[in-house]
Image 1: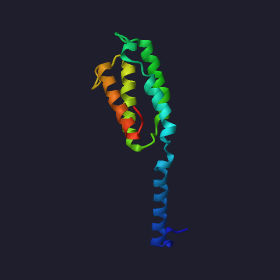
Image 2: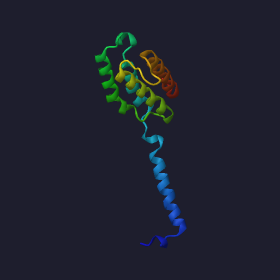
Image 3: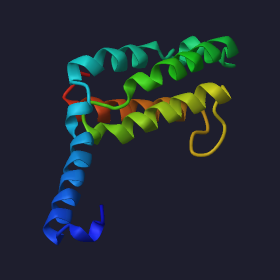
Length: 135
């Protein structure tokens, strides 16, 4: 068929329809509910060892185990129930992975486990508040 045989209205209708389908795919319908997502988030946050458990110097085996757990469960946290939590969760995962990979963290803005844990707590609170989760 010759594309010129279509009228402008017909082509505009096709463009609008394709755009609507594309936007529908990006909608909230593909995100889990808070109830579906929360158990994975909560269990991963609780699986992070405390600074006392890590010891000083940090236990390399515990760091490796924690890093493996983070990398195993990270895909289950995306997408979040609401796009407003996406960046905070991604930042939380990035900081946690960096801290336990470097064990102890010593580069960039995260220069120690103390700094990492402070930032992880801040991001956890941001996620929990944004999604209406109990602290």
